[in-house]
Amino acid sequence: MKLSKAKAQDVFKDNPQALSRINKIKDDFVFIDIMGKEAYKTARQNRLYFALLSCFWASGCSSFVDYDEMRLYYKRMAGLVKYDGKVLKEQSWAEATKEQAKYTIDNLLRDMDFSGVMGSSQCKKYEIILKGIGEWLEELN
Image 1 (tube, helix red, strand yellow):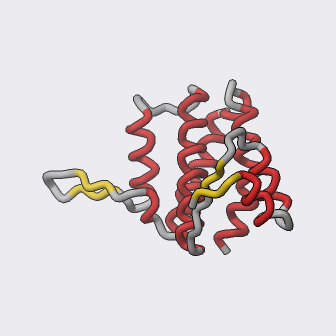
Image 2: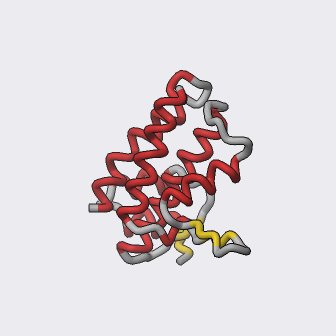
Image 3: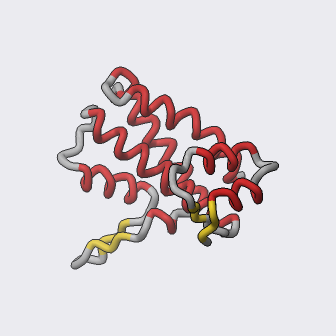
């Protein structure tokens, strides 16, 4: 939904977090997406998963040959990759259940910690992601 920035500020005047995000937008219009709890969970889950993967890869601390190998490894861990004898079938990360996502993200975080991401050039980004994880976990419950 497209709203003028002024209208969006009026609509969200009682929500400081939303208002802060609207005020950071430089354009005269904002776009608002209305979704149910499951869609919101999936969008947050996707952002967290891919932020962690990109941080891990950019850190240079992973032992994977390339980004796709790493991504498939964690999707396999979540049960989202199957091999039927001929073809590798990959489901979207958005299809992961809460339990699959939590298990995989916990293991991804463990691997990132053990491999030394905190001491890498991605340390600041990793710290920012870790601060946001508490919010994400609360929303899943």
